[in-house]
Length: 254
Length: 289
Image (cartoon, rainbow over all chains, first blue to last red; front, side, top):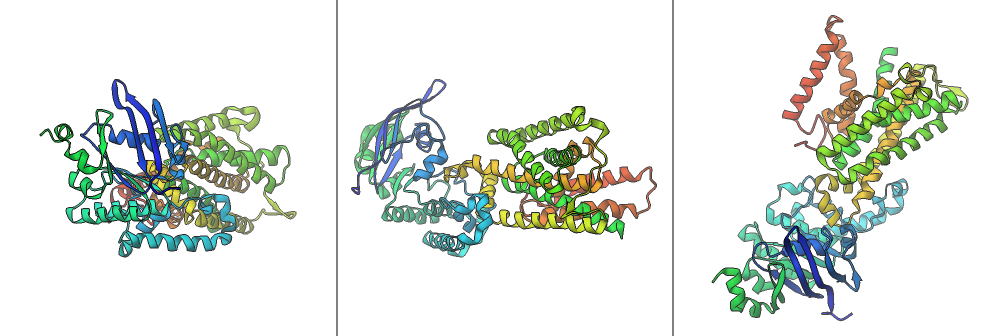
């Protein structure tokens, strides 16, 4: 498989809510192992596009192909199992669980998630040890080793985002959909979160990120899609897209 | 001594009910108001097989567990779509339906007349008819239930249930088919409730539908809420506390005419107090907000 081949292809994707065409014929391609940013004004349909890709909404028309497989009309848990992981705008970690439990909960195909396998739990003891080690490794990777037994609710918002990232790493996801990873995060933590995103790329993950902070987009992304009123109106390298006058006019009103 | 044994037996009978409801309430976050229905289904299935078809206790018990688990799919189905208040209403509806069937299908259940003369269980031809033996017998089932739920609660299966409780959407986004987990939570919880039903029926040797009403469902829920949801010791402490409490109140020497009312008021006050001051119950860990 070539490094920068397409991992996700979206073709003429449409979704409307009543009369509002939230996503109106979007075409885009994500390259494997790259950070692709999705920018655009509020209400452009960015989050709707994420909901369509992750299966929480079904498209009215169009195709979504992930690694050669059509995934539109598939249930969200199925899409997640194929390797598309998501971090929501409001993080959505499991608040009453510890950091370690949060990370452990996403293990893919854990045999002990099937209640009948509990009758021969001994057989899976090795597996349990192995996933515990893996979970601890990923928690350390995101820099929260000392918070491992902390209830997730008690962490700062930025730290919660890091837990969400550790969770996706544990779940062996390949494509990360990040919805405004820096929003609401303390300025001191933003750098940490961004470093982490770049590290994810180094781990070979593909990242699709919605971001409002233009400096962030310029700094981390390899490719940018600009979305307005449900359509992709421009795409290219960050410098090209963000340097474009019409884009600046739509986005910043200058 | 017999009095003490009776209380201990009642505690053993309620342990499967409380621990199994905790799987739904404290783990999956589904406030189920129909646990007494499964308790009743277990009691009636076992009883009818034993009385009418002379089936021995153990096969009758397994049939009760199986039937109760099967019927739980009826309430598992709405839970897949309904959350919060709407699920509570659906479970309330199920409770009412089951009670009505038990009450009105007279040709099968004898309705309000109840079924007397339920045989005591027997083990290898040895009939368990004395209190000490029945205590050990019920302790055996309470013990098995305890071990089963201890392993369920701490398992990855239990962990995913907790995730569903905290945030179902996020659980789905992590690749978990939450339908699978919820259905199994119901099947397991209802099966264990049926064990209590079979024990109760063969202990008291008489059942009628009034033992399996909405009031009873609320009582089981109270065991979990007062004791505390989301772990093992919470529901257990709830069972011990709420089964012993009325016995303690008995020794206060209140006149017979006011005693039941005072008891109800103490229950009510206790729940309000706990909800305000200790939402996680006596020893639980999950806070009701």
